[in-house]
Length: 278
Image (cartoon, rainbow, N blue to C red; front, side, top):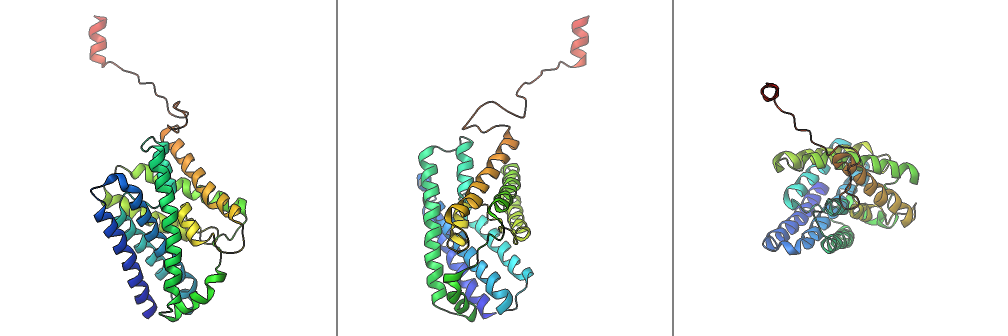
């Protein structure tokens, strides 16, 4: 339990950082990319610790999958509540760009900030583990140079896994966008936890390029290009397919609706038709 207490303090520090940045920049929406930096940093930092609990705590601390995935759900729920519209996910930033809800420069700044936040989270986590506050973190510190990759299947299999998971995630997200946050945020946290649990033997279903960069790109087993094909191209492809199914087209690329008809037929009430015949 002492290991979990240390992890709880680490989680709280990361969340407080994101909350402070959001509070300070609330009146300056033009600096929203800094919110994305803080959101990505918090998400990756917390997920690195969750991964530590999963990798080490399950066999060294006697923690079962029910405990670890409950921790994951709480982290995702807290991140959604604290960070709000700052998702810390490059695919969601690109999604807004493709929907003509954002211009080129803010999109590029947000994506760059997200990857910068993810990289900083790696450095902070490495320093935190080096403190060896608990036995779990001491073991993790020894394993940090030889981490286990999250990609447990071939590149092609991994690409389709991430693509399918990203497709369902973005399709659900698009349908929930107009729902109140009280409903949307818990449902998204449940969905992300479920997909992560389902795909744990394949890719872990990150569906987030900056998150996958922070959690598995530095692990041996695959090249950076292979990781990018699975976690970046797979996520973006799934997002694009979900957008096409939801809207019928991708507004940024082409205006013609490929699925849904834009024609509207005006029908007169039967009473009016009868009057006209008379």
